[in-house]
Figure 1 (cartoon, rainbow, N blue to C red):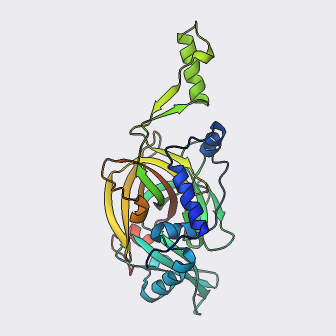
Figure 2 (figure 1 turned 180 degrees about the vertical axis):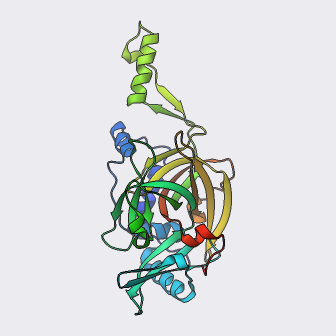
Figure 3 (figure 1 turned 90 degrees about the vertical axis):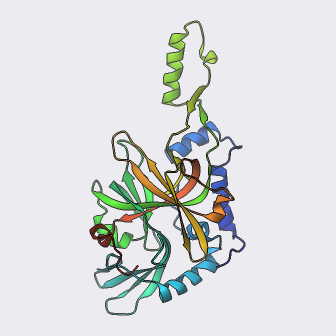
Length: 325
């Protein structure tokens, strides 16, 4: 599969990733507030950008190739086969030796002919215990965006579940499951800023009040900028759509993989929390989206990513070996 010219939708997603990682464009305060709250996000029910992030090939060119290859060469696991009422579902994935696979979900009547209903880049994530907060099934397709609680009174963290039709009965609010969670990057770069300036919000108000109390002869106009050192920090901010995030993290380990002839890097990261276990997140990024950057252990990175997760496969939980794929 050779890289070809990107279509307009792909160029739009690339522009979003570039803007998220831009060092020159400073957003307005209102935009920053809206971004941090996630109020501008939408449930973008399309996998085209994810496929392009893997290959650089427009989805309308790539998907027929993916489906044909997976139907011919793909394999499955016991945990990827299930029945709902009179419908059977089988997930085929290829290649079996890689942690990033092309997958096709087949559906059909019991003991009847199965047909392809979706094609997803399937990420092998790391186990994380997460509590379900809410679910947004896609109107078209077989997946869903799943929200999980991370902090009390905080916004849920969202990811796409490609096996939603298998997991849906378990995705009950306030119930905790072990999810395999990973991320696919639209763009990654070495972090550039070690310091940010905060000009509003509760943290700024507390800082300004403390400074004025320590300097009673001064006015609010004299309050110096509130600068925060972000070197070594781990940050996750909502992106343009649910399941997309701007992140800052430290690379703990680096591995290589590939989907057919498309080379990928896996950047292993961990996000610590005060009152819950850390979030372990492998980030898959195509070499073409690194634009010459070679990540190393210890690097601090900025990235724009798409989260994917699923309830841990039973055969993964019970044994380290795989059953067929």
